[in-house]
Length: 266
Image (cartoon, rainbow, N blue to C red; front, top):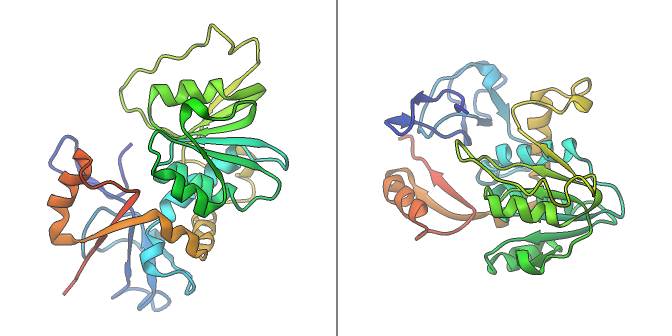
């Protein structure tokens, strides 16, 4: 799971990160002066091949364009399991990825969408999207489709419990080397449930003949024209404040969804 242009290895030292928006200072004439998105670690200046850059649409503020990689992940999940009009859908885990999935689902007509999370503060975000919110214990079951993004065993088990017969869970979580135990000996087979993974590293087979990775990223940036995605940006720090901000994020003292880092290349 190495990030593009990563240097070093975990636990450290490592140069990591991949959601970067900036302005091209030198390169092909078609790109010089353009605001672009690039999958590159945290750094105020860098040199990359021109093909690693994707121009940001003029209608998308650079501050919002940092979400392109996350929206792309959510978009890929919806390609893996396209919703159908009338579906009952739950998104379990209202972190950044799950919230992006819910934001995209909110655009579809005729869906019944609930955002499920243990943090009651996420209810305000769900209301802004126009979708229901529920604590895991109170979430409505009989779902046709569940997108799981809590990165916890409990969240994945609950996702399976929420399914109607023949329903599907799409798992977007990354567990690293953590083993996960699931109740596959109970209702899993009798209800003919489906558990499938979704990973942004590849286009789903049903879309590969029509879309490239570049197409998908371009579409994600185009979707970011909607100012509703600004709700996902919950904080910002300057680059020289990053060590303190990272420590506070890791300990939970700095809560939120996407904490943006602003660079000054002077």
